Length: 571
Image 1 (tube, rainbow, N blue to C red):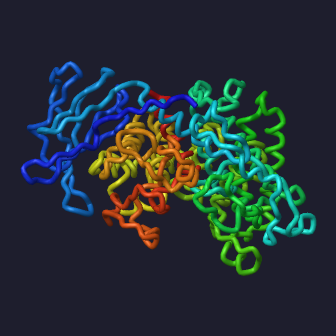
Image 2 (image 1 turned 90 degrees about the horizontal axis):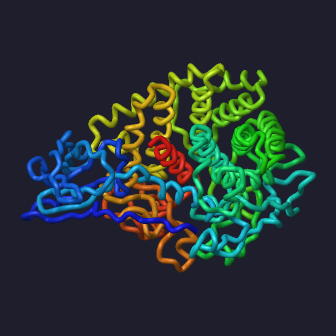
Image 3 (image 1 turned 180 degrees about the vertical axis):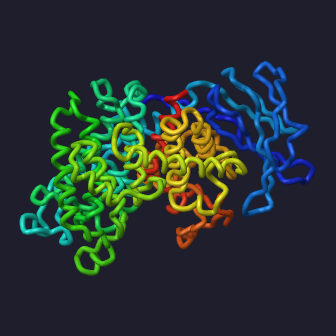
């Protein structure tokens, strides 16, 4: 595994001044692109007459300007949003506020290492194969969960595949902090990254993450997705085309290494949402992998699988996954992640969109017209219409391009309005509803990702600033001063809710993992955890049991890869 260079910036220092509130400076802990706005946030003192900026030779540069003072929406804390001015020359700069100093970095490759680590995370999450020292370094581990003997759960039984019969379903990624594999979230994660790839092909051709497939003719990001796509294909019943909702143990494993796990694994009930998500991403992947010389047969196989899964969903429109009901009816009861969803209109829109863009068949376009949304919504695993909408935005010569582009434009403008009075100079972070389960991915990364589409297809060069601001929030310019990505910045999570990082005996968790983030719901308080704050933007605990705020997941990292890679590509 290539050594990841950690940039340790003094960005979260604080000092008490004459009994006043501590002075703190919040900033992007990795640094800034030369052409990016250079904004920091100062808390605890009005920095107007006491802030200076020097270069690494001690020369005082132009005085920064205060853009505004903002009170926290939830407390009496006053924050000063400060523009450091034009610091376009790469280098290191010292920011001084009274007696407090810290360093910031300006360089053109500021996001290169963290982007590689965010994508390399998926290699470290592979199941069923050895994670090799050559590629993983100290995170190497033996193969586990080979999944060559997986039982058909009674909820998934058919005449051809009765309960208790076995199938082989190897490969794929562990989904999150647990060791199960879920079709809904896998499809969503790949869908997000395929969109990012389609918009930045040349960049991804150059991005080397040092995985076993590096060096072939396929970009590493596609090689990594293929590892999971090959597993997904095994989750389709070849007899009827339906797709099993997940491959799981009955209960979550303890915090042990994969090789120590003992529970039998099952494929559980087919669902309409899993089948449609599967159909969508297989059709999307078939387009991307067409004429690929490393995976010659995949595009044809994926198209056929997508058509069959879509038809099964059309024939079973109410086959929603209801784990509670299934566990009352069948044994063993299943108590792992649900990814349940009682409305499949958005999944149908996504699947029909991707199949139309692949085949051009009008039946799919008819379904698109019947299920299309009236407004753009942030893509998340349970509301995937936005993934289809973004594909329409990029399809300049296709029927829904204008409609979806207009919807995206309205959405982007609403985000811009939020940034104008923000406490942390970002569209994210000043509304209570911004915070919750997985908020840093779903409410911060994914809106920023959509802004980059708007920047390319709605108003060229205008929206990237706001997308970057959300990235700045994640990387340190936030109330708690965390870089919320493991292994980067001066202050990052050390104890994520992640079984391998907890059990492997290594002090540092996998690098490049985005944690869920502040969650005022604090659903894990019953586990004996004590949050230091109930404020929405400070309800975060860097403790392993905090699944509500400190878990990791493939869909969250997919959003991080999509955002950071695109920002890296355009600078």
